[in-house]
Amino acid sequence: MNEIKIFSPATVANVACGFDVLGFCLDSVGDEMVIRKIDKKGIFIAHIEGFDLPYETKKNVAGVSALAMYETLDVDFGFEIEIYKNIKPGSGIGSSAASAVGSVFGMNELLGRPFNKTQLTEFAIKGEALASKCEHADNLAPALFGGFTLVKSVSPLKILEIPCPDDLYATIIHPQIEIKTSEARAVLPKDVPLNDAITQWSNLGSLVHGLHTNDYDLIKDSLQDVIIEPHRSKLIPYYNEVKNEVLAAGALGACISGSGPSIFTLNKGLETSKKVANAMKKVYQNTNIEFDIHISKINTQGIKII
Ligand code: HSE
Image (cartoon, rainbow, N blue to C red; front, side, top):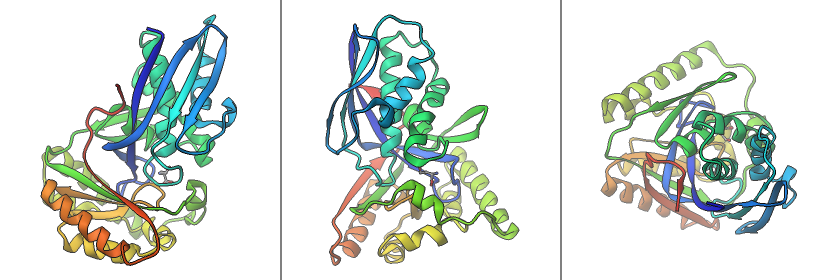
């Protein structure tokens, strides 16, 4: 096999109370990429569609993660990468992570899978860092593993796969404004009051427990963010209005997806997820901001060959 086409999914990082550690994988939106073995040594970005991204390997997220893997190989061939980008950069649903994992996943398949998913995440962290200016894996891990993942530590990299209830869905609104992760990180305080830290880690622990035990009430009770949301929500137009409407429509909880501007909810069942989507639409259709809405079951497979 010399060529492979893959679907690299969008993801939701942070999940309210798990800043930089928790994430889950979506199934209804993602990028497609083609990875091809070529005679010429090196990593080359051969084609990009969808958004204007750099062709220079060292400036391209998919290129940087591919290079991180390539440098560990002793081979007399190279790879070229085609990127069909559907996830808008700066959307808050893991656009850079999808690119970063896509190249290394595809190369690994063509090489006969010498690396496990944690090792692939290590390579992908290098690509993600190009976009967000810091090394974190909360979008990368769910894109590669699927489902919910908890990044226990980055160095050494340790990823835990967390089960989730069968009837859990996400609804996401993506207002068409760009928030760069590096800028959304710059607005965060360096120190956290102890009381807020206690609330946050209690919510993270109980959310993980609720996911393990299929306890939708506990999931609902845990989807709160007292540390990050107060600072970042100011960057997102109509954030509070959306949150109020989706909770009234039956969402278990709502918060900023990754570093925004997307807002996600978790919901029990497809019917509620549709009601939540309508509630989001109701708020944004009266504004001059364009938006997309996605309803997705939690994607327990993650990145895949198509
Ligand atoms: N955990 C990251 C953040 C996700 O919120 O800054 C975005 O890359």
